[in-house]
Length: 246
Image (cartoon, rainbow, N blue to C red):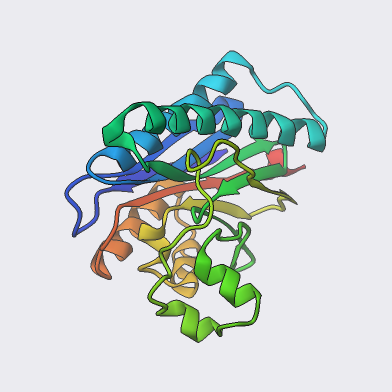
C-alpha cells in the first residue's frame, strides 16, 4: 500500500486547525477540521482525531462484515463526539467548538467511509476524480432541494455554513459509504483548504502524473497555496497495489 499525507497552514492563516492520523497497519485514516473561536477549533479537531485513533488502538478492528465495520467506525466517532461536546460544555472558552471529520477504513480492497460535515473523500479512477462523501452544508442542502444551481452554489454567501459537526450536539449521525477498489484507483481525503482552491479537474491532473502518494500530496498542497492558500490544507492519499486488489 502506498500512503502519502501532508498538512500545511496555508498562505493566509497563522495556525492550523486541521488534524489527521494515519494508522497504516490498521487501515484507519482520520482527518478533521475544527470550527470555533480562538484556539477552540484546533482543540476540537485534535481531540476528535485522538479519540478515534485511541478507540481503534484499544479495540483493533477484527470485524469482516460491512455492518459490523460501520458499527465500529460509528462507535469511534460517537466517542469523539461525546468528548468534544463535553469539553465545549464544561470549559467556557471552548463554547461552540466542534469539528468536521472524515474517517476511512480499508479492509482488503473494500473501503468504508464515514463523514460528518464537509471534509471530503474522493475516488480517482481511470483519469476521473469523483467525490464519494456528501457535504453537510446549508448550500448543499439548497442545491439538493433544487433551490439554487451549481453555479450559484459556488459563490453563495453561506457556502461555509455547515449543518453537522462532531461535538456540535449531544448525538452525531455520520454518513457512511462503501466502495470496492480496482487496480490503479486512489483514495483522497482532504479539507476544504484543498478543494476550495483546486478544481476536481486540476486535482485529477495531478493524479494523472503517476507520482507516488507522498509526491502527489506535496503537489496538491503546493497547488492550493499557489491558488491563494486561504485556509489550512490537509491531504491523505492512498493507493493499493495490484496484489492487494486481488
